[in-house]
Image 1 (tube, rainbow, N blue to C red):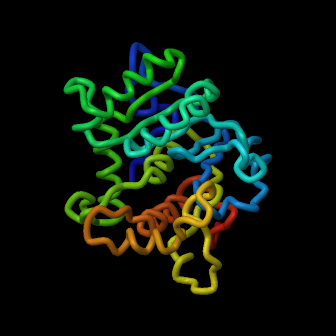
Image 2: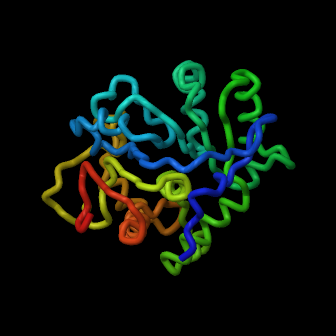
Amino acid sequence: MPFLKMASPVKSQPIGDRVPLVRNPCRQCAVVSSSGQMLGSHSGKEIDGKECVLRMNQAPTQGYEDDVGARSTLRVVSHTSIPLLLKNQSYFFKQARDTVYVIWGPAKLMSREKLGMVYRTLVKVKEMYPSLQLYILTERMMAYCDDLFQVETGKDRMKSGSFLSTGWFTMVLAMEMCEQIFVFGMINESHCRDKSQPPVPYHYFEKGRLDECRMYLAHERAPRGGHRFITEKAVFSRWAKKRNIVFTHPSWPGG
């Protein structure tokens, strides 16, 4: 399976007048899950010690530094999470000046040429924060991620009624930009079949709301409109056997 070359530019286009995002490979990356598995992990120092730190959506660091660290090199954000970032603009856009934001979403919402709804919102954000490093995944990169899902699972994502998760896009980008990847707080595909596992929040910053395994199983079984979290984790496990990927807190079998 042809992985993206680490030396190639991240397949994104800028909001505003910035050049397309191109960066040298990171030697070591921390991919930080938003899972409640991070609570009590005391992984913050280890995470911040990596050259690059990748986070997802609206997962905060403030108040959780001991478990999740404080640094953010790149934040991968779903188009559906933009309103959540806008609720806390001072935290995400004023303070995190060293963070690169990469937004993903469907072409009809993200189109620069057709002025998609999300694209228009991002242009306004960029006008308010001109120094913000804000990018969107290109339509070609989105198609690549869909094709990759089909190659790995044998299923057409759209025909199977599923949506790729932000974790999927983050792992694909991590394989492009990182020589070695340490994934923190991500459970494996068999975790939720183990009835002895204690309940864990779906997000570490939303305690007492959604249970992680209930959420995973509901999405996996949904006939349409669900993320295939468990299927994706099985794919990540196979990638780890081919690439330099280590899963920790919790660790994965064989890794």
